[in-house]
Length: 331
Image 1 (cartoon, helix red, strand yellow):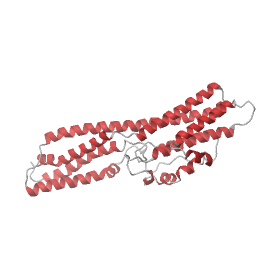
Image 2 (cartoon, helix red, strand yellow):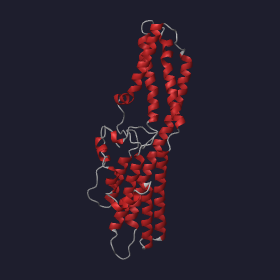
Image 3 (cartoon, rainbow, N blue to C red):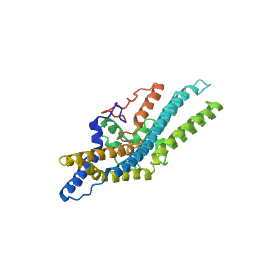
Image 4 (spheres, rainbow, N blue to C red):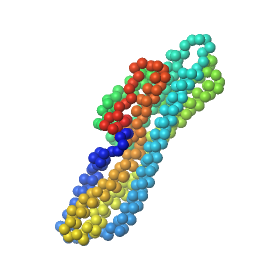
């Protein structure tokens, strides 16, 4: 996620420069062919403008749908932050031991397992799907610190919070985050059997686990179900079709100037083509908010913030630092 106030004009252009270059080359080919052959194949601009309006409306619909997916993903992770703090606070304050024995190790184990769940969920959401972009988090050249940490792998991060034996068990299952929550539920049931949790508190903890399952399920829904391909594909091909006609329409407009028409048609065609493909690209890169690109929901930073909060509640030592903002990006 880019966290500075604005992308610079150069960053915006650099991100989408190919469409501008291809637009200039294509319009140059059309214009030079028109000049050399003398064929009158220009098109009246009025019907093209109607097509352009339709394409712009459709791109607006696609971008709104993509933004809704990104914003929903951010709300889901906001709920995970809140529920994590609630869960940890409840573990630290609601467990009752009438024998006078310390429950610090037990509380730490439960909170650590919760941190393992968050990390496992983050890794699950970062796995690439076939409809996502091939450029993944391992190739984020603008955030080298994050890329270096990511190379440590899931095993190393989880082993900070759970035992190796427990981790091996999870690897026999297909959905690690789900199994971690199941294990957490079993441990809470044991606390109830031992008399460390009353009936009401036991039910309340299950409601917290249920909310965590809800959050996980909503995140997986966005991850595993793409923006319907018919909407994404039609927007792309409509943009190609309209942009292919732009030089022909501008020839009809600028041909009235016998001296400047070539120099007006080519740059304006390239600019209009760039604008339309830029709008399409913005929607395309907002569809999948967990794929690990520069404009995604910063779930790695959110996860690290939860780690810091919960470990500070435990008065832990060697608490990790927040992920830094590198070149304006937060992952």
